[in-house]
Image (cartoon, rainbow, N blue to C red; front, side, top):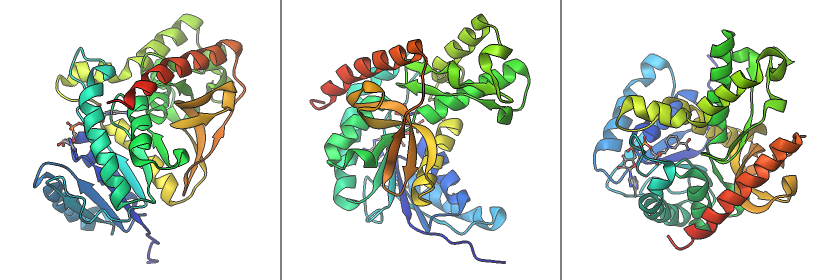
Length: 317
Ligand SMILES: NC(=O)c1ccc[n+]([C@@H]2O[C@H](COP(=O)([O-])OP(=O)(O)OC[C@H]3O[C@@H](n4cnc5c(N)ncnc54)[C@H](O)[C@@H]3O)[C@@H](O)[C@H]2O)c1
């Protein structure tokens, strides 16, 4: 059998639900040499790494997972990609913004360590509140803005697609959706770019049903949190972050909705915002601008101003 080409090292910081499932997915892709999983807790990442490695003969992948506990960064040096999942998740009734002070302290400390140990890495931030933590990670690392991005749009889009597919009882593969803006109240669904078997979503669903599905998408994270009672979603979120990391190491140029630095696109500048972007070895290769309806564009501008105000505050956290 031809040996698969594997290259590079990815570090996942935070070995909680999000981090451990991300590490597993990345290992199972079998495209990296090494996946390093770290946490402040001693023993947890080491144990999870041992467990994942023992699944290799069954699942048939060779990527090695290395667990590093106790808040150490030994073994992460020179990572090509770093996914930051460290931080508290929501509990029922909490908004993502309720996490900002605690998670800012954690993300700042993690980002400073990453800057020292993996100065050339592409950073994928997932800790909440997402847009603010992405902006903070860029500030704390001083990395070029295109090398720091956040994961939210892939997840929100996947939730929207799933909701539409379930409403119409069609395969998820026949549905295309798009959400832009921020991860939260100012998420901007883009119905003009949504299709079912190539037909515009507005042709196959009544406006009030689309509105209902958009609402469910916007509250998709809270819906899972309310059911789980402790902790938040991680299967779909980890799929999204892992795909982004894979696009980086493969330099694939895949276009994905991500939280990226926007510099003039859509008439918006100087803010991390959910937009579609081409992802490659250097992070965001280019923000892809789409034709939006007037109301969608207005929604995007509104989201930009809302996150701009909050991102300005993170420097002091
Ligand atoms: N962006 C998204 O779409 C999205 C989706 C789901 C969850 N999240 C966020 O992801 C984060 C993680 O969620 P989770 O479910 O894995 O939570 P979790 O509580 O299961 O895991 C968090 C882990 O981070 C570790 N940690 C804390 N401080 C650390 C530090 N300084 N260095 C290294 N590790 C540290 C903890 O020990 C814990 O193991 C949360 O902030 C959550 O809100 C984001």
